[in-house]
Image (cartoon, rainbow, N blue to C red; front, side, top):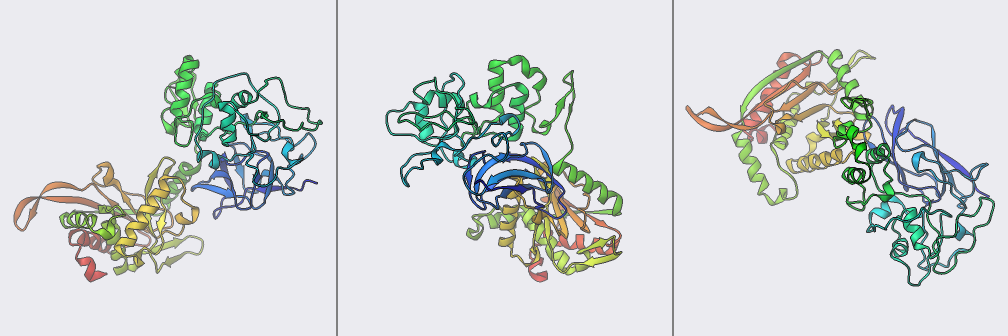
Length: 508
């Protein structure tokens, strides 16, 4: 008998109340294992892939991609007995948004194949991750197909579409119908037993797991484009935004009039006005969290910002030397690395600045460690993951941590724990050609350093005007915790190390 269990959305981060369902990584009817990633969710802090605590057959996806779900809400139903039987009256509906389908018990389950037979399951048996590792093949359009969701492939001389099925490539109903020798057979009634699979016959698949990101799926839905008919040009057979727009231009160019701005990712999820002049985008996830945090910080902590202009010619020479050092061959060396090291050394000399204000207890919490936050601009918005115990790291270790941190952030895979318990942040506005700024504190921290653009300027050096590499540093701090003297000393020490990197050896 089927043993159905429901997996509820867990709290993957401290204080999480809800999350967006980005994409399902499994399909109804698919057999999964314990700790297999089954769904990708987006919280207010990051993208997270959730593993399954159960092994069995997926019988129902209870929420659709794009839904916002509260913590504790059931999101998937799994048959831990492994039979994949109906989860209730009506035969185990697997409806999920626009890609819904009904899953019947696999026919192959009634007469299992011997181990090592080489046969493959068709339809729901291929996960998105597995399909991404295999070549995707395009099949010509044909009459819509339907029928059971699983079957076996026998040796013979199959058509190209049948070869794709044998290779385990996800195929649409049209390709699956082409793979079957006869277009006549249709799905048996829900109460009827599935017929035994005959040699050289492949039951067509019902569920179409096209590889595409949620914004691309939404665009296709808005334009009325069938993703299963769109030639994919993305890596691993992923349908891209350009693929959908190209398909829409071929089939219905008039629908593109109101979607002229859909090549702009910041408009994803928005609603276009009737005249096409405005797009309203709901505030959610990272953008909502950033807005709340910045408003709370700006109106809670009294900000003070101080500036200093520094000759960093020696730091630029150090960057060039490190780039040619074989120990640093596998990491990216930039002025940000020198500034990060300088900031940690300055805080070690003035540890009082590593503190936070506890409003609940009306206490100042002094922290005997430095968790250095690096502000990273990502497609999802600004995130500030931090390097734990940065004061204990060598220059090389710090470079490695910065590289890993920024790569993870840009990929949208930063975990909530990586963005908690920060003590100080550094933001590099110089990469945008900006001289400096007045950065707003990350909540719970007492200081943030902005590194401005580094450029050659006329500078008085040893009594003569010479071209030197110059930048501006700006330090914002919470005046409840940090007096002007303390903030000035920290900024001065950062500037001294940036101007004379050898001072780091003395102060380190």
